[in-house]
Image (cartoon, rainbow, N blue to C red; front, side, top):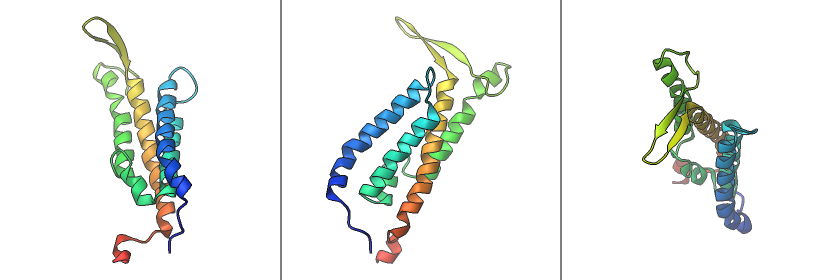
Length: 149
């Protein structure tokens, strides 16, 4: 038997989920010049997922993940972090030496770096890995689909 859900938590979960995810992206982007970055931003994203799992259930929270599966999300993050080291390697530098370049647009140019790609990979890896662990623990009291039929 599953515990009853609190209506106030279910109603407040939707705006809080969006607010926490926005804060996690802000921390991710802020981390290059001040404390923060991919790891702490990923932890905030995990807290949003856990909030949704407590308000609804673990399956509903898993469905809200960007890939729909925490393992795929963590693998995508690890892949992005690994790929971020290739540009400098292709230019003859050491692997994971971050590459800086300039992207020329029509009226301006923008400095780009593989640092952001690495941080995004860490963010997604932390979100997927820890959300999967937390959802697994929170879903222990939920009946499986096969058991419900």
